[in-house]
Length: 499
Image (tube, rainbow, N blue to C red; front, side, top):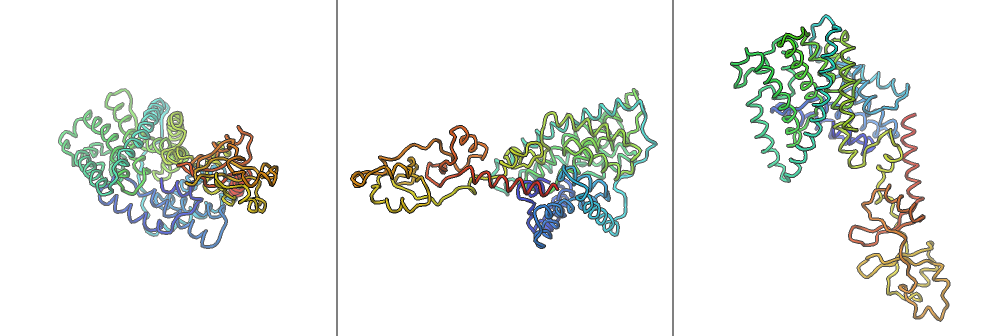
């Protein structure tokens, strides 16, 4: 899903065609060889790629292409989980937070069509939930579950940053794969439930086979001890998060959609099974497993509605809507209190490349790059040039100021045409450019963000500033006019998309 958010937020909904097939192939190889990730995120990216490619092939506008991209994402979720409602909610919640009713119609059609086509190939329900509903005396435990998952999701986000930074420091890709593979192999040896996406473990737990968590492990002979099962499951929860992040950090392709569900399900199992073992309550373990799945998805992805409707659809557990709503909302709020952005959008937000609907001015400025706004058609003067030698060029220039540079193109200052015209002919013969040069009110570096550039312009009351590269060499000028024109164009494009 990281690739998906990158294409949506940073690349103007342009997904390269190879993602239609490459995402599925590489993700299947990753999970097939034991990578502890999920297949849903690559499926969503693949579906979005189809929508983006079709939109560009037909020459559609940015707004229409983005809508097709969102339709592809909704269809991917709908087909993968046989959950058309969750597909629609996912697209609206993650991609189209300011949607309108006309935008809702194509999502309905795409999601429903994907569900129908998927049923021709796979007609089984992903998880089976046997429940008689929820009880009032269990609400306090649902709240406890939400708090635990909310706190764990904060840990998961921090662990994601740490493990990513560890693998980023390993420059050689093969060395990265080998190290990640050895780490993952050791973890799977100790905790076999970490192999692949982990849905089989959740299915067994929902079916009442609570000792399945320890099956095939070196501790399997002790699975009859309830407290050892609980301890092993708690360790597995932390191990699953590390295994997933190691798989992705080492170069594997996949997403955290499935691991989030598995982690939440395991935490739900621990809470309910522990309460039952202690004898302090008689909780329906299956209910807590599905509630934990919804809460985990909600907290980690910052998508509470997707968590609620996805779990309700794939388990048939609509009777648990109230517990699902409580756990999803509380876990989301706990994570949001520590992390403004989800695990997917945080890297883009840190780079200033995330389109946010909370502060449109800042986010639109973050989308703009200074290097595309530099005006280079200025007459450049050398600091040792004689005014008389450059007079004809100055008089025929369409600009009223000129940058002055040294022999190595280092920026020195500015010369204004008014100062040149004030000189008399007698002075021109011996007057050098250096004699008329003035210091620039401020300078900007090509890597400066536009918000910083505008700040300098406002501070110095300047409409035009010279742009230098990181070594101090002159590149051109940037003007408020160019910035405002680009800003209006981007803002207009986003407004058209939201209509």
